[in-house]
Structure formats: structure tokens, C-alpha cells
Length: 476
Image (cartoon, rainbow, N blue to C red; front, side):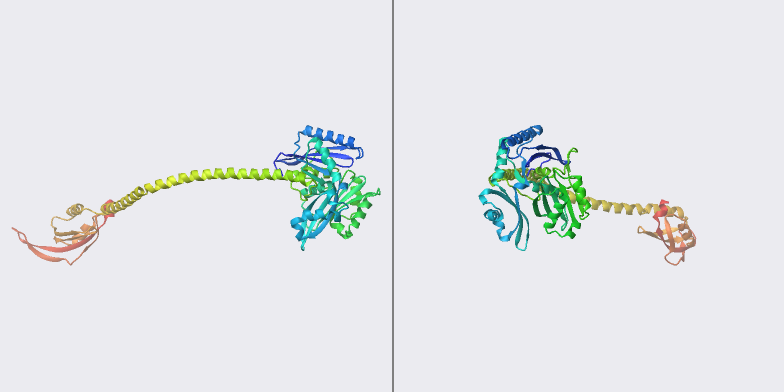
């Protein structure tokens, strides 16, 4: 199915006395009806005049809108289709089409050679398949195909009008399980009832209208379906068709038995304001199957025509996907090998440069170690007081009567031994210096007599003093 944006699809709805042509377009803004024209037709008995008019109307519509003949769907009147809701054993699944073909005479008044048919699986329960099968006589379908062939059209699908209406309805609503919806197509001489439970199609009836009282006819048919009147309270009625009017709607609403009585929803498709969409509601659903996957997929197009269309479409789809995959793979392989080559080149260069990098890193570590040692030495050096400064300070502080015969310095403190006239004065003198701190005697002061050459003996005090070097004081 072609899901491209801005695609246009044509639906041809041929009825007993009416032709409806609907052009549906898909765009970024959603779906819209570009044009919908309704034309009366001569009765089927006037075959030549009817066919001529159909050909002229369809050709004129195609030319007016420049429509491709490749995406056209056809619908046929419900009167020409037999609808059967069936249950078959699960074992028939693999060969279901052949089973239904052989059982044609069981489900219809015709032989298998006389009909076209299709089916749609509805579900599976307790080893049984639920399905809907539709049958139409070849003598009813072939004239439509011959007529379209004169225009150069090979339709993609042929569907009963009721299927188009149901798919359009389900396209707009997601119905809760157990909720009952009844679609009623009301026309001049017949009305069709389609019953849905949730999203499942349960029943389809075509009823002739013998009375002018359509409301009574509708209610009588619903009761014949076996519906419990108590179920009406949760049932929604949707009316559409050429003969639907406000009188019928008001009459059914006035019964006050149903949850809702209205025309079907159409909010997802933009419709021209001059149209009354509920009157041609099924016709709007005919081209929809070519744009959106139908919930109920039934197609009365002969198998030989359908297979050809589908085979070509499938082959083109497979070819397109394969081509895209090959191009994508080739592009990714090119990118992969390009980056792999660059990665290998970078990796090889890194391998060659690794010894140099390691040597540089070793030199860097050694440099950092040397810098750290130098920094520590500089720190020690900046904090240490030189011996010259200490001697200079002592020379300036101590009186000339003090003799120093021994001085020890270890970088943190000094030890002075010598003689002085008054050793006790030394503590206060040294303590005044910014270089010395915590000045104290290391041993008791003793007095000794000293004889100076050429002079008289004099009494001196022997001392031994210790002081800490205070570098912070020196910097202040």
C-alpha cells in the first residue's frame, strides 16, 4: 500500500441509480476530500446509455483532477453481495480459501464457478475460527470490470459499500469492548443494518422498506436480531444514507431508548462545506482503503487480477527495501573502513612514539624530583642564619672583656663557652638580639683567676651559654 504523503486516491461508487466519484488526498495536514461528485444514472435495463454515461463521467473526473489510473477502488451495491458470518475449525486455517470455495454451494445458492468471493478472519476462540465471507456473482462483477477496462482502469479492489462504511467508521472511532454500535444505511427502498460489538463486526442485514414508518421498521428489525431491549441503553445508533433527514433522526431520538442517535463521525477527514457527508458516507470510505490499512479487508477483485497487482507491488517493495539496505550497508562499510584505516594509522603512530613518550615522561619525573630537592634546599638555606652573621652579632653585643674560646652552631642553636667579668650580664645582652631566643646557661658559672702576661692576676667567670637561633626575628 502506498502511504506517501500528498497521494490521491479515487473511489468509484456505482449504485443502482447513482454514481459517486470521490477523490481523497493525504497530506501532512491529514486527509481531505478534494472533490466528491454525485450523478444520477439510468436504470441497469438501459445498459448502453448507462455505460456511456459512466464512461463519460469517470473520464471527465480523471481529466479534471489529473488522476492516475493506478490507484482506484470500486464499490458495488450491497444488493449484489451475500454476507456470511461463519465459524470453522482451526484446522482449516492453512487452506481456508479452498475450503470456502468448495463450500460455496453450502453457504450460497450458487456454484463455486459462478462467484467471486473473499473472507476476513475476525478471531479465534475454543478451536474455532470466526470469519466473515462475502460472495458476488461473476455475472454481476464482470460488467463493472469490462466497463472500467474501456476507460483503461484496472481497479485495485472491489468492495461492498457496507465494508467501505464500516472501515470509515472504525478509522474514526476506537470502540470499547462490549460497547454496541449499529450503523444504518437508509435509502429509498431499503436499509442496511451493520452491528458491531467493540471493534468486531457481528451482523449485516439488508432489509426492504415496505412501510413509510421507517422508525418502526428499524426497531422491528433490531428486535428480530434478538437484541434485548435493555441493551439499547448502551447502544449507539449511527444513521447515514441518501434518505436520512432530521425527521428520522428526531423520531429515533424521541424514543429515548438508545445511548446515542446521530450521524457517523467524520472528524479525521476534511470535507467540503457544500457536501452533506452523512448522505454519501459509504462513498467516502471507498478510496480510504488505498490510503489507510482497512480494519475489515475484503476484496472481490478476481484472484488473477489481484495476484498480478499484489505480486508486482510486493516485488517492487522487496526490491526497494533490498536496494535501500544494500546502499545503506555499502555506505556504512565505507565509513567503517575509512575510520578503521585512520584508527589503525593513529594506533601505529602511537606505538612508534611510545618509547619517546616514555622517555619524556621519565625525564619529567626526574625533573620534578630535582626541583623538589632544590626547593627543599632553598627553603633550608633561606631559613638558616650564616655563621658570619652570628659572629658579627656576637661581636657587636658582647663587651671587649668577654673572651670566647669555643662556639658551636648546628643551624638551630648556638653554644658559647668562654670567660667574662660578669657572666650573668651575658643573658640579658644576648636576649636583646633579634637572632637569639631562649638564652640560658648550660652549666653553673665558676670563677677562675687568670694571669695576663705582663699584668696582674685577674678574676674571671667561666660560662657556658646556649641560645636558639630565631630566623623570624631576623626577618622582622
